[in-house]
Each structure stands twice: as structure tokens, then as C-alpha cells.
Length: 313
Ligand SMILES: [Fe+2]
Image (cartoon, protein in one colour):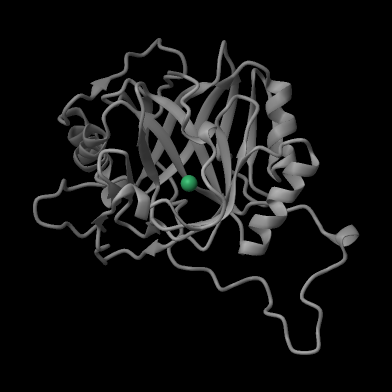
């Protein structure tokens, strides 16, 4: 199922199934993520976030004292599950999570990564893309209008979760954890400031990324939209709803995606992303190490100071 490169761990997760956050007020989260274009369903003690037309949640939001990652859940193929559990148990800095801890269910294998983040491994569907979708936005033809009147703009709805980014006190250790425990591959990095990792079974340029901070923390979730136009429209719908802070609209260098990050009510971000680089199964990405001034964005506004602030540190 997965082809190994020499020296890399044998098994690998293929997807993020979902992520779970704690936030101080569920009502605020419901307002924010609904405006972002997700389907938000209140359940007992939590919210479930889905993209339109997908029965499986991409996220659960729980009430807690402050914003933080509650846990991150990964999916693997059934034939790799037992091997992956052993691989994770044997990886540096990983500790199995005891039953009885909050969120730890009987399903799958629960553990803490070297930073203390709670994670779940389970067998589950491949939710990462297996190819690049055809451009859904019909190209403008000569003699036709390319835009619609402002009053006829419809709400942007992301189609899927693309990736998450966590703060870490040790980027090198986080790269090692991704490689040894999860079987992810390094896509690109910028020294010890930021690192992007992808799954080997067909995946966006990054599934899990880490950025340097003094402590662990939740930085952003990224959601795919079909085109750069919808990145801009998404930014506009958030601005119109009172969420005008963020970074973008711009284009990344590492990952190449067009993006707009919207600052959420807790100081972290939700990203509209389009056209991120794709790493097909069976291919090797030419991982690079880019100087910071060359790695962040190809064009767009300067990074606001609050973008790299870890509110959990
Ligand atoms: Fe991102």
C-alpha cells in the first residue's frame, strides 16, 4: 500500500480524520465557523464541524477554560494499524495515553506526542485527496463577464480540511516525531522555524506543519476552496461579518497555495486555501530548506505581528 524510501519508518498515517479544540464559549465558535462556511451542528457538550455534503465531521469543538488543541485524530489503512501502533510506541518522546483521561475513547490508540499533544490513531477512511481536482470555476470566455454583481455573491463553503499547523518549542523534534511515529515525510522547511510534512499515500504538500514558539499551541486549520477567487470572497464574507483581522490575500511559497488567514475569536486562525501543491502516492517530493525571507509568501501584504503570536505560550 505504501512504498518506503530507504531509512524511513515502515508505516504511515494517510489522513487527519478530525481535530478537536477547546474554546471558552461554544456560541462564539458556532458564529465564527458558520460564517466561515462550515456546517456547525450542536451536539451534547460540543459542536461538530462539517463541510457541505460530507457526513463525517472534520472537527469537534468543546468548552474549556481557554483555546487549545484537545486532540488530533489520524486515520490509517487497516493493514497498517498494528504496525503503526508499534511504530508510534517505539518512537522517541511518545507516551501512550491512559484510559480515563478526557477524550480518550476505546477506539484506536491514544498517545501524547513529544510536546504533550493528545493524539489518536485509528483505522479510517482516506480523507486526503488522491489527485488534483479539475478547476471547478469555469474560465471566463471572451465576450462574457467574469464577475457577478456584489449583491449576487454567494457564501463561500470550503470543501474539505487541508491541514493543521501547531506551535512547538522544538521543530527538529517535531519533524522526527512525524517521520518516526506517524510515517509522514518532510515536504519543506525553513531552518528550525517551520516545517511541513505530508502523508505518503497521496496528500497535499502539508498535512501537519509545525512552527517555532516557546511552547506548544494551536495555530491554524486550513480549508480548501476551489479557486483563488473564492479565497478572496471568503476573506470578504469574514470581513463583512466582523472578522477583518488576519493575513492575506496572498500566495505561499512553500505549498504554493493562495491563502487568506482569518483571525478567530481566540487569537488563532482559520485559513481559506486554494491550489496547494499535491504530492501523488509513489512519488518523492524534492524537500528543500528555504531561508525565512524566501519561504513565506511570493506576493501579498506583510505578515502582521499577531500572526506568529502563540496565545497559549
Ligand atoms: Fe496553512
